[in-house]
Length: 266
Length: 309
Image 1: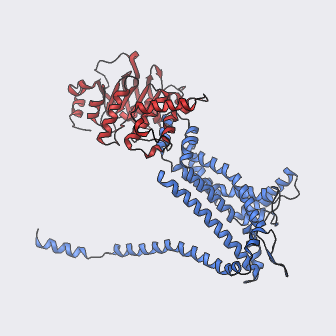
Image 2: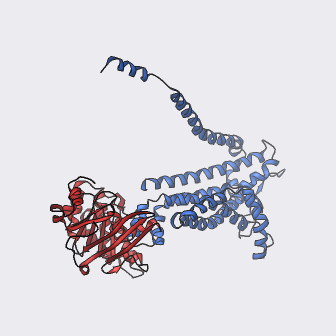
Image 3: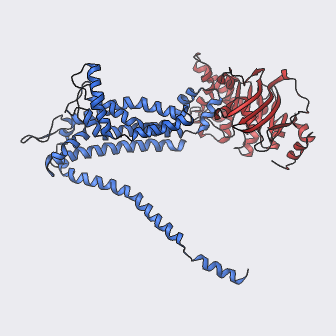
């Protein structure tokens, strides 16, 4: 089952290359020798029933799951553009600059819209002088890219937490852009949004694709179909099948995949 | 539906079991407990006002009370009731205490809430609570027997009791409770903020400094204000470590006398109902009003912060 039967991109084209990754939460094993190649510049969806390990895998790529402490143990390798991110000498700050993340619930910081968008940039510029004009430019570019500029341009100094959920989630994407990440991880980014906002956010994914590699976890199969080029299906901590989205949904190779997309479980 | 099932339901509906009475009884009991807080506060206020108000609005010159440094309540022919030196003493000691307590308590709160994990954290919390439970007379004792000789030796001073001694002692006393409240304030900051900032590559300290402290600002202000309130109200340790000399302090080594210590030291000697006795109650009213305002401000700060969480 851990075998991947699909034609895989060659590893050198991969933005993310997951190789034989296993992960334990204490004594509970959440991932079993998972392999996954994510093509640079593409949108790849991770689907599977609750508890299948898709979020765990996603949260391993920027190592944010290490917040839980030493009780998380990971083996195998995860390469982002060729660099092994699980290595001991990886600087987490640098990794997370390259690999941005959008969460389930929009989580803007309790700061102004402006400070939210510039937060990561200010953290990473390490003493470098940046003028107000340059900051304004970054701010506008980022907000325009997520199609939020017109909505918030008159209240950039207002609190980000006062925005609608849709705008908050867009802002959470916008704040990643000024540091030019290579990869954006999204953990069910629309689960707190209504259908219209979901639609708007999915549209945004297509805008960002190409410039950024997007790996998105979703519990919503329709979303995976609409908003991804490739889909990987996971079950019980194992990678079952990973193929171009249309193929996976139309002609799944594995029985488990077929059962899942037909709604027999999950 | 069969006819008899209706009659069963009817019987059940007006049956009051034991648990109904227990519920009502406990409800009443808890209500009395809750209301008693109001009754006691009002009662205390009425008591100290009854003893002091006649004097405040009669004999006392409020201008003199607030601006004169002459506190000579026992003088036979020319009693003076100037509380300025006492207010200055209390303010100086409390001010220094906050200078000592704020870095300690804020540092401890940040460490416990943001950095320590597992047993370290639990152990520290227990220790901090233990510190908060040390009786103030013990702190006063430490001030007299340890701090005082230390100040005399280190700074080559003739006396070791004064603003410095009592300020440091009071600061150490106030720090544990401030730590606990500040830690609560930091804990109340949603974890999603920390996660968001960390996912953007912020270090632990950047998260604390740029996200958690601003987000918990109101709770931290409340912690500070409660510390100030504690400083104003503390009696025994200040009485022992301040030197108890009526004096507007000009150096940290000066002896001072606090409002609270004055009441504690003099009330026993003041004949009940005398002017002296009433003057001491006036100090009490003054303290009551100040601590009430400080607590109100702290409460306000917390409330203002609550909806943002």
